[in-house]
Image 1: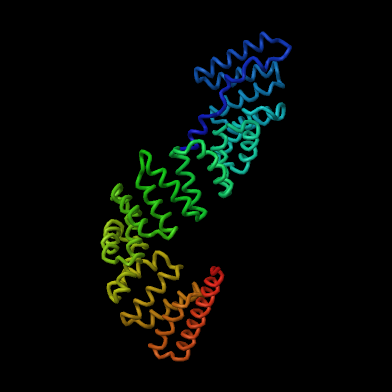
Image 2: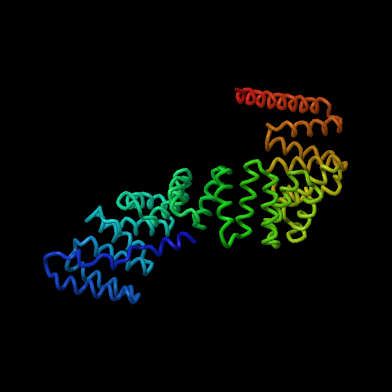
Length: 381
């Protein structure tokens, strides 16, 4: 959306007029300018291109005519030729704003973000009030994952346009990607007071609130998102997940069952619902769900650990031990993996190996508590 608006801002060739005339053949130059601008006004970009080329035959060192030619080329999707025309213009007059601006916008449009940054910054040096250039610069910086820089530019834009929906949305996404959840909550709250507040932005507010440890409030945001888009399994899963996180298992179960009714192979929903049943000591009911989850996400510690536990609790100890070993291999630093594996090994009669795993679990647990104690001491005045 924002990029489409930016591309509409390409410098209007009509702005570059008789000022470009040189001493030789001023009447001819004037005539060619007028012909080219007439074609532009009529949207006849191919004819405009030819008219500007004829103009440049008369004044080959006219930076403004090169700029206008670039615009005509760009309107015909001849991006490479347009870029070359603007680069020629800048070689002739580096202080001309238009070619810097047009060059930056076009490079953003064709996803050449790293190249776009310099001409856009130069545009802002020459014309600090050019908000179109600043918007395009934000797109380029985000495209290059230079998110803190993008956030600084967004702050300047939002200071001028505090209720611009697209700016608020871009700022929210940038903050979320940086895990700056409190700031994301602020801009999303502002966005949701404006018209066309979709379920997407309510769901993102829920994610931001949850990231900011405001999970109860996140639940309300997700409820609103589901109310606006009840058919979205992604949003409904988010609501179910938050119920699960808050141990509101009955509510979570209802949402997750609905997700799986619509998407029977949804691995995330299967895992979360399976975990609820495992927590309730209903391993038989959990097992098929956790089988599905482990198939969907075979390289995740949580899915393999939960499946291993369910297998052991339903009597398939041999296979359960293999799953638990796989979980431990995926992440050797989680105490619960070693603990569950140790218990299963002891149950199967592998006493020495089981005691070794339980000892490893105790060591990891003690180390974790020691680290947490140190962090707590550092927080004390």
